[in-house]
Length: 127
Image (cartoon, rainbow, N blue to C red; front, side, top):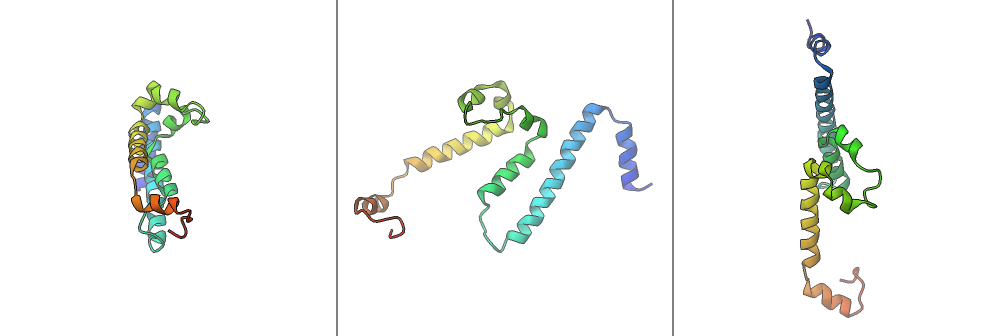
């Protein structure tokens, strides 16, 4: 009996609630493998992950059921969403808090050289 046949046999004897977990796990593994292949192909372009790759990674790590519970337009109800029970239990909450903290720290940074350049009326290309 091949591995595929064994898997099909086990799936046929498994309750539906566990099938959903297995499907989510399989989709996660496939997306992770695709990302590794893409990463190897794009490794010569940049050593830093792009924002889109980061978003894809978060999406692949978030179960589909969690994504379906999110409001369609988060920008309209972001504060309300952050307070919801779903969001507080989601792995996205921790990532969102880390990003907010990083944005706050970055906005608090003060580069005197940049401030002088802006004061001189020079563009950022000149800087």
